[in-house]
Image (cartoon, rainbow, N blue to C red):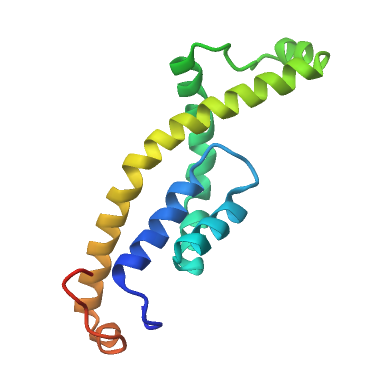
Length: 150
């Protein structure tokens, strides 16, 4: 906050990181957050903090997002038994197709959740930051005065 970042921009940066941090993809989160935060002119550090803070939640929500996608789109269940996994391993094309289908459907479910969650998170985080700034006078004095739209 001392760098002149407004509470609104900081809140949206953190919300972006948190929401993208729980998406059901694996391995792309950091790069995607960098690109989106840069495109939207948001704070890179805050967005990365948001992503990494929710990393454990990402792991907990991975299977539920896939299960919701399976339920919503009426697709095959995930192969969880050893026999099912071995059967799919002998059919690599089917395995890739099924994984892509599960992932795609999970991303659609996540997108719906993200569209609702991100503005709510940004609103609550902004409110918390404003309260924090008013309680901590050092932060308030070190940046320009807040405008009504902030």
